[in-house]
Length: 325
Ligand code: AMP
Ligand code: MG
Image 1 (cartoon, helix red, strand yellow):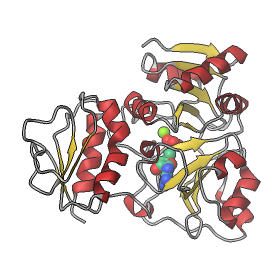
Image 2 (image 1 turned 180 degrees about the vertical axis):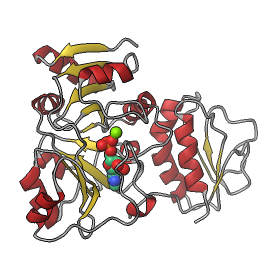
Image 3 (image 1 turned 30 degrees about the vertical axis):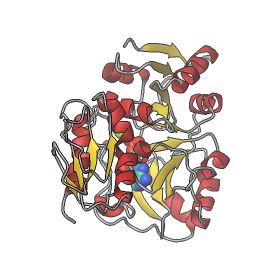
Image 4 (image 1 turned 90 degrees about the horizontal axis):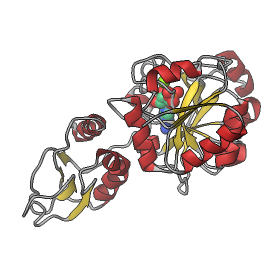
């Protein structure tokens, strides 16, 4: 794939919109850092995004929307969240909120969680792309896993050239650090310090922010400590990994062609990707796990999944889901 780099003019905004609609990957400036955007409602686009970043595990992504009204179509706002959104949006504050049942965001974009991180950026280029696309855009920082966040288009070129479709160059990003993240799931807690100061947030809330349990996610791409994710998704049904055939009454999470007799007697079978495509498998992972969990079989047998590419993140997530609790 050859990455196009365009100055952020009207033609580039239209190009970005078409590209996102087609499930492509577009890097664009926000006021914090350059984001790597994909259609947040398209599981395959989100899988491609994780692949381009080369991240060895799935972490939940921030969904960017054009305004508060769009955000309220995704998540439930309590009084604190409303106050914070009025004070700081558009701007460098991300809110983690309970996902609405009708929330159209792909399961992979929230890593299967029942909460969603949402933000309204104020950078004119982000705003124009969000208006043109008129759907939520999932956008982590536009860098390869383990590298620092990019604040210029040249940084994005250096990291992601020929791994993404388009880079919209809108100059250096004004803030240069990530957004602050506040969870409004119970007492408001600061999950990550960033572009809006703790003092400013506490002034609006008229009380101190709670500290999240565990260490905070300050490192680049650091996932939150599991304890912070109150509603961290894990299936209730035990998983049996690397199985080539099911025992009677088990559910089967397949990958690729199912060996002869491999699914005989299964309570239910879902295939992450019958043709063995890891991008398709990642896009289906959380929704298939949920669906098989709902069958309430005694175990979910999981076929082996290769460790290359996105397979590493898929295996990481399955291993966590299989770990005794
Ligand atoms: P980035 O997009 O690279 O700025 O990082 C996103 C950050 O938001 C990560 O630290 C995630 O763990 C955090 N995050 C995203 N969604 C959620 C969520 N639903 N619950 C808790 N934390 C989240
Ligand atoms: Mg990052």
